[in-house]
Image (cartoon, rainbow, N blue to C red; front, side):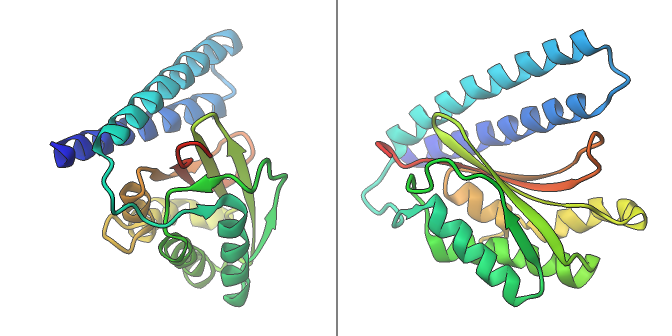
Length: 206
């Protein structure tokens, strides 16, 4: 039963990622009527938050005694910045709210998976500078790895991110899902930045 609930939770998380991406896309098209765009965004985000609450409830039912060790948001981001810097990618960190909050996640696995994406950015797309923006929600943290792609990169980004994120045990999407989270790619039309977004739940009681 626990395994079935976890599987259901992962499917719901996939739906959550789709809703969030749809909201961001709608927000990025300035030709949509402003009032309709804002209404759509509000509905989608509210629905996403409701799905997130349901996911948390399902995960609590499926929890086992062999939970991975917890790490803090601040520790994860510091480790990622150091690892990316060693590979020639400088990441500027935006304002960080409550870096001491904990994630029920393995620091090494998350750092390594995110570092793999950073390495691919530097190696395959020649990105040398990016941003780490962090947004906290009641039950989740959203970590946003952003950069400004070159004009010629746009056609390459979609096949690139499908491979760079990875669904296996070592890929960022696979690792995020293993920790009750999700990861996806988004190209914002409003500011021209490309984003790898990671959604991770906070540990219970964090």
